[in-house]
Length: 141
Image 1: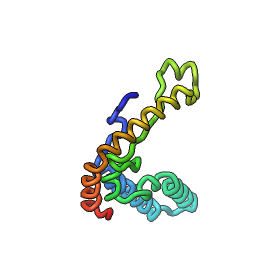
Image 2: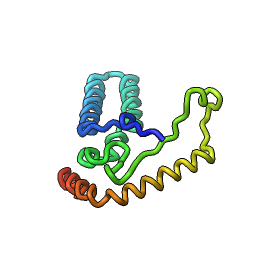
Image 3: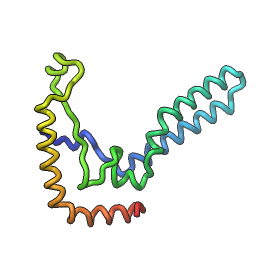
Image 4: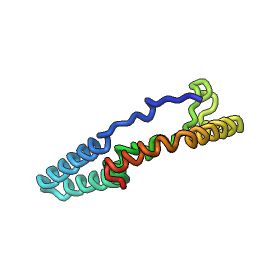
């Protein structure tokens, strides 16, 4: 098991920054549409806007900025949750294009999860106070 905190880097302003960036993109669509004169231009812009709305805006509409400051992009409350991923070596990837979960992997997940539950149970009371403070600070409760 390897813990790599840099793989899920957290930024307090990431959601705000992305929201502003996507807002500017919507303004660009509006400016282009306001200048369009042909039906072809209008349809092209409308199609691009539709694609943007259906594929990009979900990244900001699923969570408020305040909640994001506490939970991050993957929705984890610090001290109470974790994200586990199965990584494989380049050598294994060359042999096995689609990674599979082996019985040994399942046993390792079980071992890690059981140890983590014990750790969280022992430390949850102390961290719970910090969590409640953070939730109050960002208006979550």
